[in-house]
Image 1: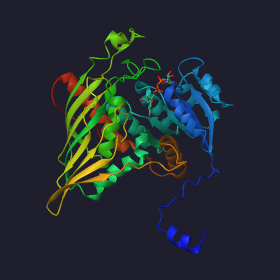
Image 2: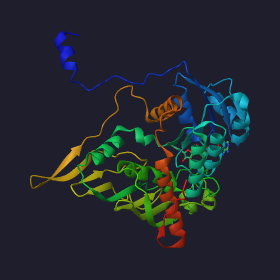
Image 3: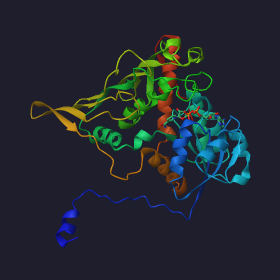
Image 4: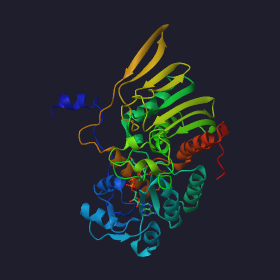
Amino acid sequence: MGKDDAILNQFKEDQSSDSHVDTGKRMRVGIIGTGWIADAHIKSYLKMPDVDIVAGADLIPGKAEKFFEKWGVENVKCYKNHKEMLDDSSLKLDAVSVCTYNCQHAEPTIYALNKGVHVLLEKPMCVTTQEAVDIVRAEKASGKVLSIGFQPRFDANMKKIKEIVQSGVLGKVYYIQTGGGRRRGIPTPFGTTFIEKETGGIGALGDIGCYSLDMVLNAVGYPRPLTVSGYKSDFFGVRESYYPKHPEYAKKFGVDDFAAAFVRLEGDIILDFRIAWAMNMDTPGDTIILGTEGGLRIPSTECWNGTVGGPMKIYHEVAGMQVETEIPIIKPKDNAPSLFDMKIRSFLDACKNGTPAPVPSSQIIYNQAIIDGITKSSELGKEIQIEIPQI
Ligand SMILES: NC(=O)c1ccc[n+]([C@@H]2O[C@H](COP(=O)([O-])OP(=O)(O)OC[C@H]3O[C@@H](n4cnc5c(N)ncnc54)[C@H](O)[C@@H]3O)[C@@H](O)[C@H]2O)c1
């Protein structure tokens, strides 16, 4: 490299990585629930030079053993539930990933925290507000790290939404329309744990609704939710014709496949929300954030999964003219870690360095309270106050 290049390169974007990993300090990790998403967790853990995967648990006999065999991970102890695993003090676990279905999020998380083990908990945080409160109480009492598995948070485009709002270019934000949907996208390719009341607990509302709520609430600083008028339905999930290969799934369907809500947030912000696993429409609309000085449009995606669907646009006024500024999509650099790798790495770093959880429960409890509020309001058929007990 010539002298001139060196000078000019100072103005280039910093390409260096600050992901130095202290391999002298290793983490003993266990995985609770070895189903679909556990694959993504182990794939990322296996890339981490400071992690020893030492244990796994699954309620289905032999499932954890097969899981580790598939991933070629040896010398791992397998257990038939989270309790057996966490009760085995010989494991000396530092951290666990809780990869169980929604109705089994709270119990293993609280049990692990009570045992002094750090927890990376999959999204949604849980099913009810009370469970979320119990989780946060256990987290506080333990002093351990609890991070919730929202990997879209690590997407540069998602971060940009927050930067735009926080920059003040939109002025005071007063109205947010968010959500997303799929025309036909009830998640049953791996069985029925998402659609049964006893395992999933909540449907589209929790599964993908939590992402769209996080996208906007994180951008505006997670204001406390105050009231909600919510609606839920299940018109598609309960139809046998929806599942030509598995008509029996229709009878098992016990959650929502569509939800909508009107939520009042602290700071005089209105949140207009809708989410669908299935509907007769391609999308229920883009996400829009309206402020006194500008409006931000975040395009939806076809198969909604909590990502930015295309270049965003800011609608604003410049010297008396109504103009739009396009915010191009930020593509990851070659060899950049995946969003999942970043979720796992940031969790491990917080555990090792005693730094705050990358996706803290203090925020996600509001996400959960909205989800639970929508359920309760829908059941009552009227607007309700969102109550979050003192922690
Ligand atoms: N972050 C993401 O992108 C993403 C994607 C898919 C799923 N998820 C979340 O991950 C969670 C799991 O989803 P999944 O698709 O892997 O479900 P799954 O049904 O495939 O796997 C869950 C597994 O947990 C086991 N289990 C339940 N309770 C247990 C307990 N107490 N102890 C031990 N094992 C237990 C079940 O037997 C099952 O094998 C859900 O909450 C879902 O929302 C997140």
